[in-house]
Length: 267
Image (cartoon, rainbow, N blue to C red; front, top):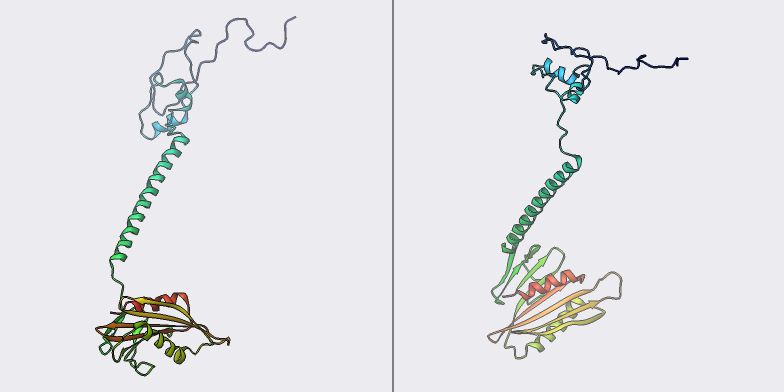
């Protein structure tokens, strides 16, 4: 009994695929020779895909059926896949690294130029304390100005800043035989007149090339007055003496350094 589940074809002979339909062209195409049942060696596809047909619609050249590979007959002309994603990533990282290196080099050059310009530029001076009677000249930094009248009798010039620090200068009458002794006596005198501290300690006592300097720090028992600072410099010039007194309150490290540097720049 024959099997009712036999599939096509019913006969035992060789199977052949149906011939492909003719491709649909907008214009007439030369007829191709008909296929014989034995032409199974050549692969075929039912029709040219849309990409190939679309290229023809937009004015492209109609491809030859025989010149197309089997995949192109069905899917159309292959497109350029471009660079792999990994290769594109490497190229992008290389370009980014080069750009960052260029920016870093430009920033470094700019910083070096600005540093050189700042070093070459002289420090600005807002004024100068000139005392012809005492024979001294002091360059004043920003925030300092020369005053009209010294607050202590006997001094011939004064300079102040906005925070209340001051420097005074005066000539010393007579001949100075011992610069250190003269500086110690002046520091004691102006400590009583200006500091009036409950506790006064010596911060520095040092000999200079042409004189002597002594610095004091005053502390107070009340909570209102903060520590004060006093520096005295006695200079000898051709047997003449010049006395400089610097004072600030409250005593702070940064302000004290400015005052000491200013008094050390006396000419």
